[in-house]
Amino acid sequence: MTQRPHNLGLAFADIARQHAGRIALRLEGEPAMRYGELDAQSNRLANHLASQGVGLRDVVALVHDKSASGYVAMLACLKLGAVVVNLDDTNPAERLGRILDTAQPRRLLSATEPPADARNAAAQRGIAIEQLEGDGASAWMQACSDAPAAMPAVTGTDPAYLMYTSGSTGTPKGAVIAHGAVLRFAEWIADRFDVTPNDVFSGLNPAYFDNSVFDFYGALFNGASLAPVKRATARDAQAMLRRLDEAGCTLWFSVPSMLIFVNTMKALSAHSLPALRAFVFGGEGFPKPELRKLFERHGHRAAFVNVYGPTECTCICSAHTVTLDDLNDATGLAPLGRLNPDFSGLVLDEQLQPVPEGEAGELWLGGPNVGLGYCNDPERTAASFAQHPGHQRYPERLYRTGDLVRLNAQGLYEFVGRRDHQIKHMGYRIELEEIEAALCALPGVAQAGVIYRRVREQFGQIEAFVAAHDETCEIDEAGLRDALRAVLPDYMVPRRVVVMPALPKNANGKVDRPALMHL
Image 1 (cartoon, rainbow, N blue to C red):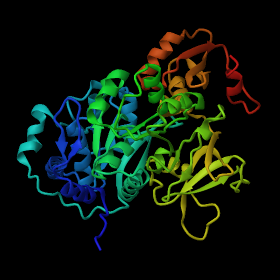
Image 2: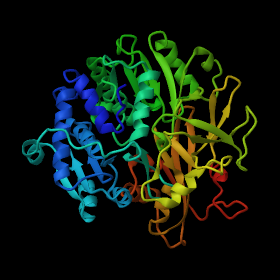
Image 3: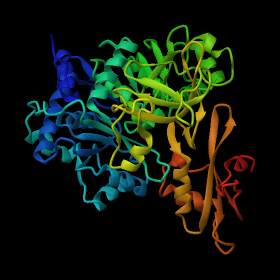
Image 4: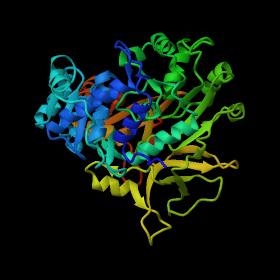
């Protein structure tokens, strides 16, 4: 009986041997890369990084726009047992700095010259920066062997990657996911979506975004191809569809917002993506009226699969193939489905007791694909990862999702809402408290309250309300929004900022968010 690989480096080496001549990366603006070449180049870079002292559990930060060298670097790190963290280089320097302070990377690898904010944030912390393309590539491309790196020391419980999400304290939090969890996730993708080496995964999701875990590991760890779509192309619906059409895309995965975008722009016709067999979507709710429009036009030729999963639990924990019956009622969202075999779930009330079937409660997730916690953040780890409340005699860790769900009569989970102030906007998970913290740190701002207002059924906007320290403080909407862009990514900057003499308070003396919704 063949022994299963116990880490991602060995698993990829096995896949590369089996499919050496097949295309792994159908790159945009670069020659396609076959599995054998991808394996050899990642070995070469792994050997170079090892010569620079990078090893087991060291964090390596990456900056790339889905280039060949970016994917080579991800695999090189996995082979050494180093922990991968892809950075959003459009973030301002201050926010990147907060991420670097918790991740504490040993090196920052950049496909090309990194943007000034990323370069400055790393340099201020003494983090070595290495460029992988152009003149900077010579050190590893020419000087190091492409013999396999030493990988057996890496175990399934070692961390594979960090994925950063918004944090309510104002500091982003880095979810830590282990090798074993990712290996099981890749196997689940293969089983659930009948993946073969003939499949081509869309690479629509940014590498620093949780949904990209499905793209990268689902394709390259099952012998399929990945067709990365660069940032600029993804902004143009027609160009995006042409790119995926030329690549022969068979599996689409994106946030619902992107599918609504291509449909609104009339880019997705009956003749688009003729090889496609499934639209997979997740990361935010897909309003039923919009989903029904797409389903009625394309449901006869491709499956529509709604997936759900927190970043802290290896990307996806449930999937549901949508039917027309799911869309007869125009309210709410399509079911989340049943949990995949690597998860167990509890639906609990505020007293941590199971709720009756059909009633709403908070979803707690257990099982081997639950993450290891938050990087260098024991306080928030303890708050979100807790011992099973019904099994105190032996360890069984669960993740508190904060999502309110209910089980329907068919045994499917349905999303109801949140127990806190976390939102999903443009596919990003955002803690409104992080925006409030950024506002309160600005000169002259005494208090801030942030809400998410639904503008139309499928669209919402972030709005902020602030009170000045006193009447002599001169603060205005334009100035506050400009100041926020220096510390927050654009998708977190409120569309509207209202300056008020004072903010409404509830009986506990806290900002009254429901009252702000009426302003």
